[in-house]
Amino acid sequence: MNGWLAAAAALLACGVGPTLWGVATGPVRRRVVAQNTATLLVCLATLLLAQGYDRSSYVDVALVLAVLGPAGTLVYARLLAEDLKAAPPTGRAGTWAAVALTPLVVVPLCVAAGPGRAALKLLAIGALLVAGNMVAARALRGAGRTDCEGAGPAEAARG
Amino acid sequence: MDDVLIVITLLLVAASATAAVAVRDPVRQALVLSLLGLTLAALFTVLQAPDVALSQLAVGTALTPLLLTLAVRKVHRRPHTRDDGRGGETTGSTESAGAIESAAAKERGE
Amino acid sequence: MSRRLRMWVLALGLAGLAALLGAACFELPDFGGDQHPYGDRAVRAALSHHTANVVSSVNFDLRALDTLGEESILFGAVLGTVVLLRQTRDERHVEPAPARVSPPVRRYALYALPVTLVVGLYVVAHGQLSPGGGFQGGVVAATALHLLYIAVDYRALRRIRPVGRYEVADAAGEAAFVVLGAAAMLGGSAFLANSLLPYGEFNTLASGGTVPLLNAAIGMEVASAVVVLLARFLDQAVEIEESPKPPSTPTSRE
Image (tube, rainbow over all chains, first blue to last red; front, top):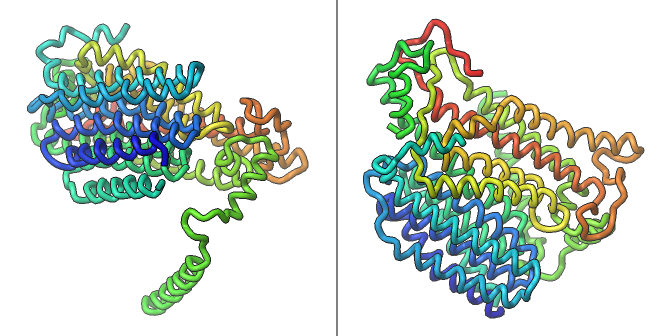
C-alpha cells in the first residue's frame, strides 16, 4: 500500500464517513450540503486511487463524477426548492474546506504525473470540480433567495 | 494492506445502504441513495472494476435522483389539484391567466 | 395442478437450486487468489482481437448476445414507460411557467452542458480502450441535455428535445445492433461474431473490429432511451395535471 492509497483511504474514512452521517440525519438543508461535499470527496479519492494503482485510465471515473456530481446536486437544488426556501443552508465552512482540499490533492498528482496530457486532464478535472461544487453549493443556498432577486432570468434563458 | 481500502469502502457501502433503508421519507432517501451510489463507485474502483464504477456513477449521480424527485413531486401534488378544483375551463386556451397561475404554482412545487 | 402440488414442485426446484449453488460455492477460488481461468481466457481473446479494454471485449465481442438482451430490456422498459405515462383522457396539459434560476447557476449549466456532452461522447468513443462504453457514455450525454431543465428552464430543454426523433433514434440504435450481428452472419460466420472488420492497431481508436460500432449503437440507444424516459417523467411532473372534471376534448400535446 503506497502513500496515494493511504491518502485515499484516509479521505474515504475521515471525509466520506462524516458526510454519510450528515446525509442520513438532520434537516434537508444539511443533507443536501453533505451530499454535495461527498461528491467532491469521492471524486478526489478516485483520483488518488487511480494514481495509487498506477492506472491512468481510472481517471475517467473521476472525470465523469466531476461533470455529473454538480448536476446531481443541482437536481436537488431545483426540485427541493420549496424545502430549501423555507430553511436555506447556512454553514459554508464544510464546502470551503472541501474546495480547499482539491488543489491539495490535484497539484501533487500533477507533479507525480509530470508535464503532459495527463497533468492537463487532472487540472481540468480539478477546475471542473471546484467550479461545479461552488456553483452547486451556491444554488443550494440561493434556491430560496431567487424569488426576491429574480430579475426575469427566464427571458435571458431563451437567448 | 490493500484490504484496508476494501474494508473501509465495504463499511461505507454497508452503512449508507442501511441508512437508505432506515430513512423513510422518499426525498431524503434519494439523498442517501446518491451517497450509496458514490460509495459503491469507490468500492468498485478499489476492486479494480472501473467499468462498473462508471455505470454506477452515470446512473446514480444525476439520473436516479431526478427520476425519484420527479415522481415524488407528481405524487405529492395530486391531492392539491383535486382539492382546490381550480382551472376547470382552461383546457382549450393554455394561455389564459388561470393556467399560467396554476402552472406557476406547480413549478414552485406546490 | 393443485396448489399443494405446485408448492411441492417449487420446493423441489428451490432445493435443487440450493444444492447446486452450495456445491458451486465450495468449488469457488479464494477471494483475491491468482487463479483466474476465465479471466486468462478473456484477456487472451481480447488481445487477439486487439481490444485494449477486456471488459468491452467481453461485452461486445465474446458475449455480445448478452448485451443485445440487456439492450432489449432497456428498450422494453422505456416502451412500457411511454405507454404507461401517456396523457390520459381525464388529464389536462398545462404550460409550465418559466423557472427562476440565479444567473451564475444558469451560466454554469450553459457552459457545463457542452463539456458534459463531450465527456459522454468521449466515454462512448473510447469504450474499446479505457473504462466506459456505450451505456455509460450514453447516460452521461443524456444527462447533459437535462442540465437545461435542472439549471435553466424546462422550455429551453423542450426546444432541443423533439421526443419523436429520440424515439426513432432509440429504435435505430437497437436495430443497428441486430443489423451488425446479422451482417456477421452474411459474412459467413456466427451472429454477432467479430469478423466483419480488420482488428486495427492495438490501443488506437479504430481497433477492436466491430466493438466500436456496437459501442456506438448502444450509446445512441441508451442516450435516446434515457431522454425519452425522462421526457415522460417530466411531462407527468411538470405538464400533465389531473382534471377536476374530464374535458370533452382532450388537448393534444404536439
